[in-house]
Length: 511
Image 1 (cartoon, one colour):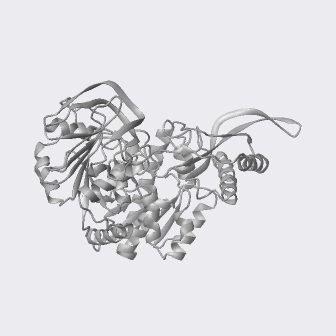
Image 2 (image 1 turned 90 degrees about the horizontal axis):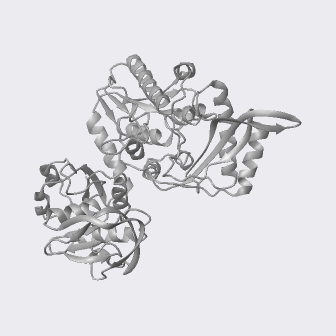
Image 3 (image 1 turned 45 degrees about the horizontal axis):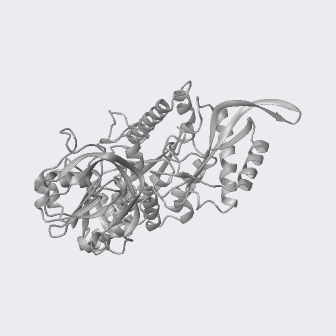
């Protein structure tokens, strides 16, 4: 059992999971609940601290997320962030108004050195602001501990009550000393010990799965990627041969990937794995389809149909396991978040799915946390550090209709790109890199003849959580080798471009 934990009460912000992630980095377990969670549930959680998250609303809008004022009387230290700070002020009788000048982005801030929250933080530092409203008059008993040029109450506190609030976002990397502030709240204010580690998550998850599943049978949706691999190993450690992993080779995998997956998980881990070869089935379903959301939905539904068919062959199966991680969930528009793109294992699930329950043991983890879990499970490092690969596979890296010929071209080009990145020693520095076959054709010259072939795009990003990302600064000489190899070794490509867009405004994948 977790000896200590902190509650992150979610009021609808796009990046609120980052707060929980930053807390976990301090070896304190963070649990996320929506603002609709009952007070009894929160009271029963025995939390060491509560964090009110940000959100896009105004506290004086009756339709915006609010909470019962009784939460303030639980005697648990509270930290309000952005909207959470305004909500705290509003609940306690302060005044929240529309700011004369909104603040967005990096902002200089002056902080009180006497605050427990800002211990060992530079008095004049930088923070990340994103607000239209602000606290114009703090509640009675509060002291202002931070201000900016346009925000007279950028931080406030009532230490005797354990109330702390900041208008800015300490959880983002653009607040360089934000992690120190969060650490101060956890250890100086809440009195946490910091004894939770990823091994504890793995052990507790396995124990919880074993108790939940009991003697029942489980079917795991195995794509061969890092996420589904770690999810499968967690279940395998919990219930052994009660788990059947169905690996759907839909013909949309990278070069040689199907054979590699079968060899590793059947051979090295002795897992009960069934490989279903259904390339033609998926290509037939995708014939004539160009719209990316439609492709994702088709692939998601067909995945489930294959699993249902295999489950009938296996016999009674109560649970379906998938390797869904948090960026999948948030991009698919769960809760109040906007839909960015549907993931096959979130938005693509058919409503008539024929299983008792869906189990997603990694649903609250970011990619780097999944990798740490994989290492704790004993998965070899070279497998843990495989390139992330979307469930819909190469179908969403081919612009327009997916055909067997296009898949062949993209597989070879992508393999060359990944090979050269590894040869250059950049495979651990670039968090994700791949090729995209565009639907654009252009004129080229090869030999003495005119060509009219596809343009290939190369994509590489650096990121810690896959919620935001910057394009990787791959050396020109490496890109040059990739370009020359691809046009010489792969047919039907005569032009190569490199994507230099960050996330946002773009997503990492093109579709």
